[in-house]
Amino acid sequence: MHPMLKPALRRAWRGRNTVQFGVTPAHAVTLGPMDIATGSFLELLDGTRGLPLLREEARALDLSDRHVDILVSRLAEAGLLDDPDAGGPEADALRRRAETLERQRPDAAALSVVHPAPGSGLRRLAARRAMRVQVRGAGRVGASIAAVLSGSGVGHVEVLDGGRAEPWDVAPGGLPASSVGERRDTAARQLVRRSAVGGPPRPGGAGAAPGSGEPALSLIVVAPRDGLSVYAPDPDTAAPWIAAGTPHLYAGVIEATGVVGPLVLPGGTGCAGCLALCRAEADPQWPRMLAQWKSGRRTCVQACDLGLATAVAGLAAAHALSFLDGELPASTGTRWEAAMPLLDWRSERLGPHLDCACGAAGHTEVELTPAAGASQDTMAG
Image 1: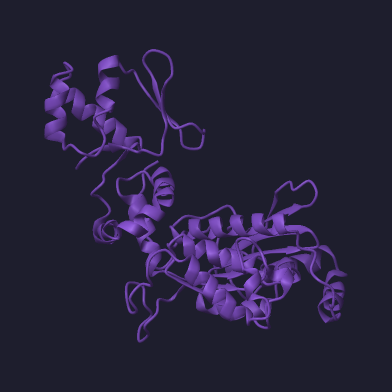
Image 2: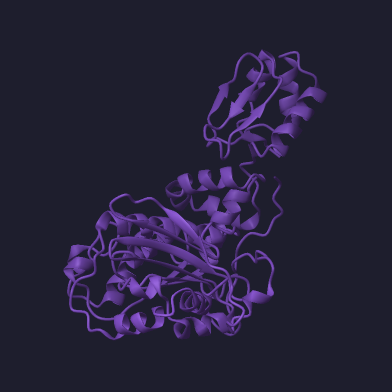
């Protein structure tokens, strides 16, 4: 091991004998008591020295071998150490792709903060290349989500949509103005390729479905141009995903209201069917109105503010990546909403319904099953 203090965490002295690693409460750690000599020793933890050399240089600071071993152990237990050579074969392969890694250094740094084990962040970043995500929708929200996922290292990003791109589909992080008039799915595929990090993964790699050259679906992101399909998702559309056990995340904008979630884990959290049943119980008129909204012919452009659409796309992509990296984001079984002009994000828990055929009501708690290809090492803390 070549211990290295995680570069992503800023370091500062809290008084004379305590050091704080990190700025924000979510990830900051304090360590003490610490004297000046030990503080100077911290500068040596840059990943270029193994423990024998660290012990040797520490003696010049009047620090014993035991002191060094205890300090390194405490730093490791606190999740403050990384190792430039850790992470396994996938991480090694990513390190050899120098241009790709340079582009993804901010992502790797973020993952190193979230996942404390040495090499764990880079291993998760490398694992994304073998994952397959399907984005349903190529409007202002869906196309931007697809671009962020591809740019974040997800190796297989598919976008499904119909028709041709309209001027109002264009967004800075999504479809460009040059795509107007093109088939939406074609324009979205080009966007994904332009956003991708490195070349495409080899077919038939880790996570591939038996008998096919592509990985099994890790996640479906439902981001249709019509936000009603997110606010009131169709249970029949989701039924095949429930049956196949495919996780899916809803995201969109309807009438100047942004929606992210729920992330549905089939059999573990409430689904579109559960939501429909709960709404009908709470408001007996809801099914009648929903039928009218769905049957009414819409000719007007959706009320989808560009800033709100970008915020929704960014939040949804971040939740999707968190799930792909093996975590349960706050959208799991929960819907987040923010309406203009205040844009105050509020959450609503969507519990399973006993009468829904998805079977989630029979589970008392959700157990995390890492997405296909995700790293599965044990985390501390």
